[in-house]
Image (cartoon, rainbow over all chains, first blue to last red; front, side, top):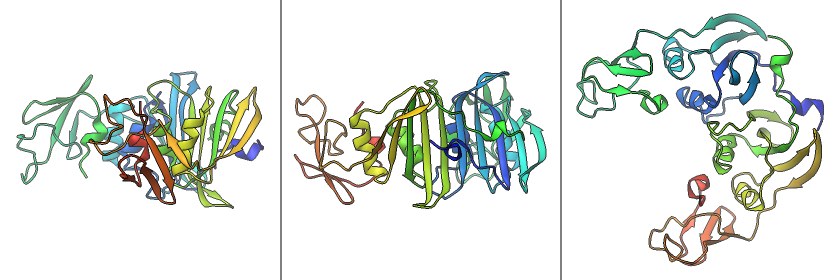
Length: 152
Length: 152
């Protein structure tokens, strides 16, 4: 194995999501809508040793800066994550993910009868709890598989 | 960003699956039954530049050597892959994936009435075609989503 094979390419422009909870990287990719078939250049480390977290995941996405709503959903599965925006090979911005109090228009309620369902004009809105999110309209609580509830 | 952050850890013992077709890395992980929650240390490069393939994926799995049946299924989605078995930080074995003529006892037939279905004693057996696999019992052809058809 050459040294070159051991490296993950330094990204020119994009986002590095670091300090993701160990084992959550594939959920991060799902939240970002990345499965590889769309051609995005991505590198991922899963369950790598970390001083702070014991184990952590790292996700590097070339050519894309995350939107605030993407960061909001990330905070639900990776509350300790740090987000580095890379421009021209340098860290241009460094953010700590902050759990928002509310998540508006990002997740779909899992209750099919909720007023925020299809063909309804209301935006979805969830109150962020310690261990999940609660729909402010119908009180349905979502505790996991957030990636499956992201609105297209 | 430090140089250290740019590196994927050299693996001590495990498998490096290189020259996977671009965008297929997550399917490789699915075939290997890895989603991160089981704690496996993995690093993945998706759509990275490759002289031979244009774009390729690379998957490095710590602490695991692939079985022949896993390699057989990998060959269906990553016919160009090379598999390096790493022991004590060195490449101990290097294999090119070879498409087998038959895949026995690995994939489940998608025809629910096939004789190889649940509660039947027959092992599944597929003939490998250029663009998929054909069940030798009921002629059902599977052309994609092989990861979804792997027997537990």
